[in-house]
Image 1: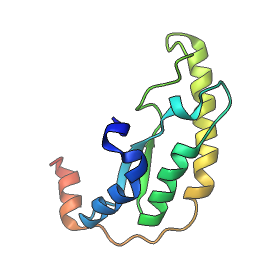
Image 2 (image 1 turned 120 degrees about the vertical axis):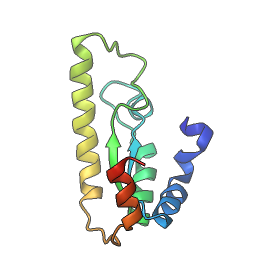
Image 3 (image 1 turned 120 degrees about the horizontal axis):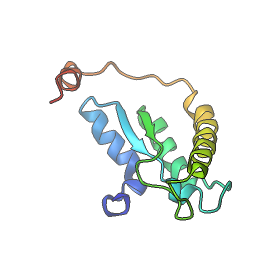
Image 4 (image 1 turned 90 degrees about the vertical axis):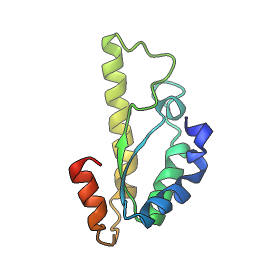
Length: 121
């Protein structure tokens, strides 16, 4: 899905287009299967592009940690999955927090966007 939409390389453009509509908070996903190709070894490069795009556009991101699946070597029906996912979530938080903690100045949201969110339209 990400490769087909090119969101992995166009995140800045995508976030900027949403901002034009007054949408400054989005949900986006970490691609765990790309970030942790080997147990306990994290390559944050795919996420770093998204983090930079969010910072440049003033977009607040609600990060989905499991949207795009998990690494192939994990059996989700075992207790080991819980331990591994918890480790990934903690590592992701440690990686995102220092970048996200930088102050951001956001323009006030448009009333239309708030109304649509409130009423689910």
